[in-house]
Length: 255
Image 1 (spheres, rainbow, N blue to C red):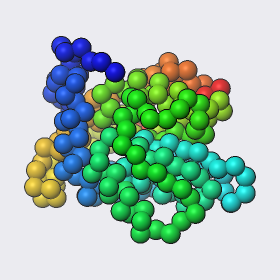
Image 2 (cartoon, helix red, strand yellow):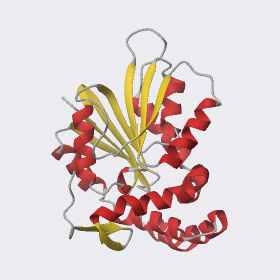
Image 3 (cartoon, rainbow, N blue to C red):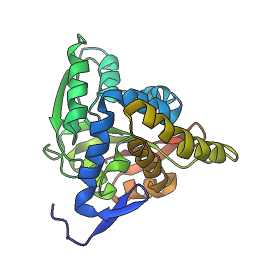
Image 4 (cartoon, helix red, strand yellow):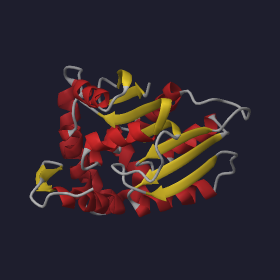
């Protein structure tokens, strides 16, 4: 994938050269990898755990050990949060955890080694915009709190469509646009004032957390994102708001 030298994109509220965004995002996650769960606790008030459970419940992976493997690619899932939940539910799963950040992958691999399990996980470095997977080979594509950090979100969705087999499912969990009056003001106050201050305490630097808060505000709202999923070719696209729209689950099928 070739980037034109003068192309610009957003990094939080800043504008940067398109080719620089992946590096800048990588630096953010290098700093927070070992405290990733804590980072999401701060960003969501601890609700990310319930939201991830809801994501896997909606995915509804096959239970039991009989039948063909359920083949999943979990993108930007380096620490394994979604993959582990799928493995717990569906022990015959084969899950490729793909993340662009080696620090995040290393954290996930360490966590997986501590768990005894029948499911098969592979941790692989890769770009969401150019997945190292063949066409039409996966039953499900999951991505949680990662797609807003991709340089070109539409290309990432197009890649999801490419690697899914006919009948495969796209499922994305992401922070979204609050749609509850009053909650939006409280959420903004918390996000822009409390979270960066906590980041200073947690990792000694508020900037990674300031970027993460800003990246949420730059991400498309629920309906706009649903339209992007449809543009990639997915059908039966729908979304579910979580906690008044603080986060949303988007689903689509390759038919």
